[in-house]
Length: 400
Image 1 (tube, one colour):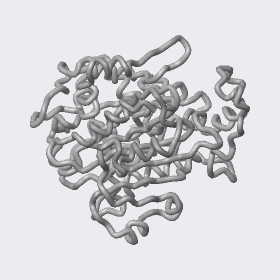
Image 2 (image 1 turned 60 degrees about the horizontal axis):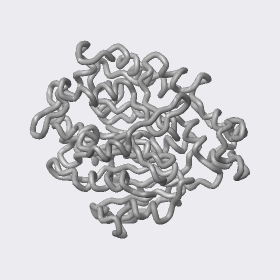
Image 3 (image 1 turned 180 degrees about the vertical axis):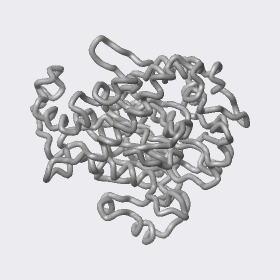
């Protein structure tokens, strides 16, 4: 999606869609990582979304085609009004990213959707593997294949990373800064905390240069750093490539893999304060990935990944419309998350003032210093995405 995170709820919203689509009953998965007032679309997708039915595979077709709804994230962006486009326009200057800087290949796809046949509508199918298999599809073919190799390098580094002995929550290592320098432009004013956060770097030269310097295809957000570009097939590129080899040379289930999500852990750390609250909101919180599998749900995988990097969530709000025994639910929640876990066994509402609108919960109770990750994966039937779109519009249009 990313991950994905966004620190705070502030006045200007820009986010990168992370969409994972397609199963018989789970049409869209949007992982919104909202950071520093800029929902960092994040960090997540494909397997990163939520539960997927076993009816998914037959729908892909021999060329890994997906129903046109499979490009929901891009399609929604394509339906923005001129006012929305102007409001969320990416602005750059010589030294920083003001909101969101698209990867070159992400920008190419958005400006060449007709040529790539990605603007089709249901029931037409979109060949989401074209840019990975056809050298003539884009000028980024070599970069894409380099990026695929870099993803494996990134996850090798991530799996081998260990926090310093005694550190469990990175916020406890941060120091309070005087109000007069907290917002200062001088990076030395925040030197103690920058030194703490630098310990979360997975490479001495940083993420973009040290690991992804060959492809240079990462996107970038203002507050939470670099993230993976939004690319078809909205999952790990191994879905389109052979052989499906992942971390340490081992084969992996690329259809449900989260190993294409890129988090800039040091940048996420730098966006935190010692007093920041950490919140994970799961809209579509079925804890069972597959009924016949012991595999943990994607949400639990993400929570574990954040925890390994020292980002411990204070609150986990889990919304799920399908009725389930609270006793059985809490038995499935790992012990390390139970004290933070809030099981809300109702469907979410798109009514901005409704008690079960999660965005109202966030705006009423949290602020711009807090780190909030939102996973949106709501059951829908057919190609109806109105609930997700309505919630996404509320994020865009919020004055907070």
